[in-house]
Length: 123
Length: 108
Image 1 (tube, helix red, strand yellow):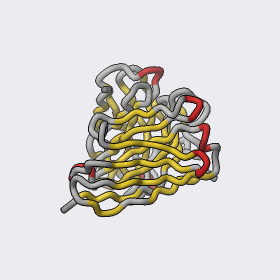
Image 2 (cartoon, rainbow over the protein chains, first blue to last red; image 1 turned 60 degrees about the vertical axis):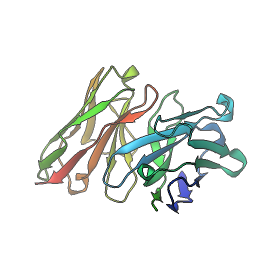
Image 3 (cartoon, rainbow over the protein chains, first blue to last red; image 1 turned 30 degrees about the vertical axis):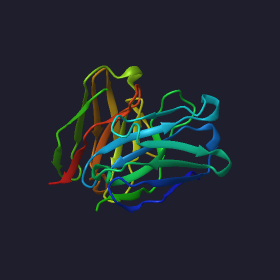
Image 4 (cartoon, chains in turn orange, green; image 1 turned 90 degrees about the horizontal axis):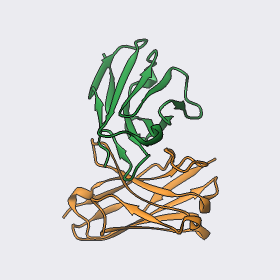
């Protein structure tokens, strides 16, 4: 059974940093890209960024709203993806989900999602 | 960036009725790489439809998707009580992947 479990959320002051983790199980993590999506309270879904597999050079891409502040990484030996968030702003307050694209396709939707972790940026 | 616009924002219907949700794209969605998700309060989104018209694993056949290019539709043939939720479309054919703003299907 595929499982994605996020952790690391919490309260942080504006300008601060936080690192989220996404522990994966039930599939070949090393062969899969991993994405992060966020959702502010009462709002819609916003794609944050992704990291591809080793076979695709661990290539990363980010939404314009977080580029230069957020960094996605992964540790295939631990089946874990990370989202390092720096220079946090109040508008980064949201539930952050890690998600997996459906396998066996060059471009695919997200078929499994974690339960989400809440990040609150406030003084 | 492809902007997705969903309509209506809210759909008020009764159980047993048919729901038709629309998703319009600001430019053509490559290879019909368009998905629909269902989200209930406090839960993560759930994939319903991918590639515009293919049902995801375990999704009942009352859910169907159609469309191509810039116009896409999600149809729920007969609403069950568990179908009242928010629905999002998403394109994954070009970067950045984008979502629509959502359509809430509420009980009338």
